[in-house]
Image (cartoon, rainbow, N blue to C red):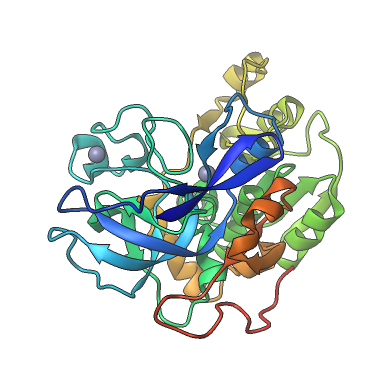
Length: 353
Ligand SMILES: [Zn+2]
Ligand SMILES: [Zn+2]
């Protein structure tokens, strides 16, 4: 048997005993999460701010140890530490081949770990998880990188890269506005913008703690509720989850600028369409692309140009996940020993926010 942490209802989670997952297809891997954390969406789910009702096994960000491999899951070995992708993607359909793995055509209903969408794929606050398409889903953790610091590489860290770095490559030195308000994606976006050489990076939030983290990441903290506009920026990112902040980000985007909104809206909201039309605003919303951005995002982390450890709010023993997640801080990381090592991961006194 194996344990899986199940989200039951707002602020209620419980371990449940489940049959240990087995290799079902040659490309499967069985992994054991050793450092798991919450996506910003998980916190909204736990706080009852989404339409997603329990029970389901939660968690889709982790570094894990490889336990078993199907004969087609080549390139990995048991005991290896790996980053595990949040989404289920086959790696060979026309969408995956075009870098759109998060909307894989083989799993058309948004299949992902840690949610009851597109099937049941297991959550990362579990003792064991079956990972299909392991050659696509897994990436070896670089040596020397603390698994706790990399736990969010499954989703939120590469999302920060996706929202800023490609736009800055097209528009070097551009100013960036980031609207925070929920959690880590906004902070990672600010961190990648700074690291990728943005002009100025203004980070807007009302939460003092997140503003302090943004400043440590090199951004300019702006303590403010959403204003009608904050200025005129070529690149804007709204990860606030607030309709007012989204409208503010859109109005703060300069003509022909790029506005991305990833703070999830769970309903229809008004849009300043006339201003968008007059200025020619490029707008994007969607879930993170995930796996195709792992390597590029990881390069910034291994080069210490982006320091995800500054965003971690606490590091706790894995067995306490039910309690810690019941009232989750912004970015808790739950860690445990690997099966091959006596050392407790992440007790190195590493700096956290
Ligand atoms: Zn997520
Ligand atoms: Zn696919």
